[in-house]
Length: 323
Image (cartoon, rainbow, N blue to C red; front, side, top):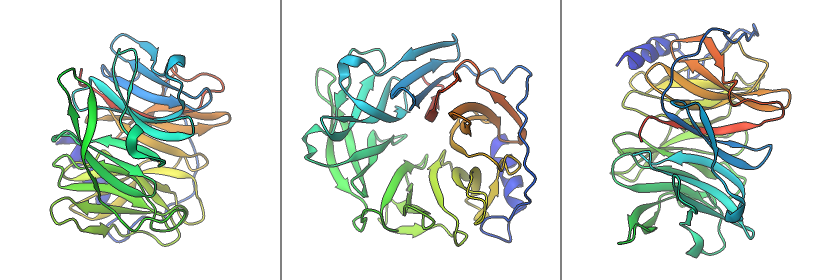
């Protein structure tokens, strides 16, 4: 509730506009004090080496997820299962992009979409309650139930296409679906350039509604949806196209930017850790680096120096406290 109240305060400042127009005073100074004591785990990708990693804050240990014997390339978007015992991600193998389910610590992952034919499967997310997986297949959003046989081997069943009008490279191409906590809605975005817009699919009525946007500004990557708010990424404004992290208040139907003053660099991929903190990626000279930020104060930012190295390109992080 503390976090919800903070986000409502942020949103009150922007009731008169879909997305506020902001002053261009650029500054960024991470704190050198001890960062918040996180105890969960973080999964993320390092595009500089084409690998996925798992970092355990409780024991300050980083583990390589992807193994050479898996014979996959370009792994992306590692997402923890609700119980924290498995990770789903997308990767290429033999020219085919599929979804993989990996029980943490297991020797090999399971290809969930190997029998789907020649399609691009990516952007997977788990449902929080009902054991489903939602993802992007080609240019539309699909959902299926994750089931297990007597030996614990996973597969997808009840495969259903949710959006039907997606066309590659157009304003209808649908990407990055994410369930709300109640599973009443699935949030995603459509489009590929300035037309990128947040959408909300109602799992009861099966209707999709667009969330209002500022003309000429792209909106994407909706994450951490709860009953009152979610985070997403958008440009600072129509003339400054650096990515910024925003909060959207569902009750107030308004947006507020978290880090307006860091206007010279891209900030993306927020991964909430607890009610006070989240992890995000900030672009620097050689690639993206990971930082801890606080919801209540964008001046409270700490470099995740245990993970950031020269030349690394760290994105697509996902955090869990479940084990």
